[in-house]
Length: 412
Ligand code: UDP
Image 1 (cartoon, rainbow, N blue to C red):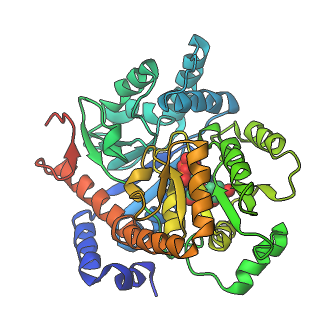
Image 2: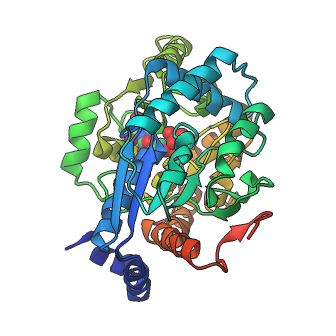
Image 3: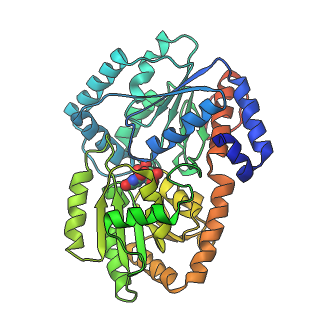
């Protein structure tokens, strides 16, 4: 059965009929998504699912990736950290590197969309091609938590973003006064992907054997995230140590590398040092194999997302979809997914995280209740079908003034 038809059981026939109708209005339009990595991180995860589903609906959606060297990605990671509010000194040389690689991409990339859908800061300068693409519409999709960004970096980016027809953010907290109009569209997960589908016990066992993890030995507390300081893996270890004084458990940290994130090896080393050889801490640096992540989430008793800043955290939706109790920081897009003490637990510190992890390990019925509510919340709000609908409405709004999903100081 096609993916879109399978969705009917989850979200109802009307939703699917509406998607088919909206996609009909986009006939003849090419949507070209552009980002900075084909693998690793939430943006690639979303594009891997949303592009094929749009194609299945008959929309000509495509996805291309900019080229960048290590220096460029060092600069864009520094910008990323600065947007998340970290004190970072972007030197003149760093701005030059950004400029130089942006120009190379402008020269060499095949840009062909009627609607250009550009994700995050790395490719933002592609808007420089706009004048040569008559009639094209441009959307800048910011996946970053820009609630309190470094002013200099934000102003630099805004200079580009304001030339787009619309800027899209994941949470109302990220809105800024901008000259272009803004839309609020949260990310989503695909329940039928290898990351989220039901797994057989045999599949789960294969993964556990591969990594020598025994979920029967001690309850597993788990965080799945790129090794990035903003995901605070060392803070997770500290929280685990506090829990461990009261409840015997094992900690599973799982992270991959993203092509546009040069920091993961350094942060992974910090994690290994912080783990200090504790045999109950499994810190895995893994390849991108979605069903393995799925298995880790399914065998965990509690899932943590102790981010310091967070654009959205797909990992939270993924865990809640599997009806897992989640303890997560109240930052960025996480409170959209978790209502405290209803569909999960929100924390503000290492001690707070530890307190709630301990509580959940001690109260499995309460944990199951939170997980069940969380699952339903994701079904209603964060599946790919809702995301697709909002994308298509946004596309159509670019051709028909009068508007559906704006907020902030939009200039019409
Ligand atoms: N992920 C993965 N393997 C890993 C770590 C993360 O496949 O080792 C996935 C994770 O399941 C999620 C995405 O990468 O789908 C991360 O998205 P999120 O929004 O949580 O964070 P980001 O990395 O974009 O900051």
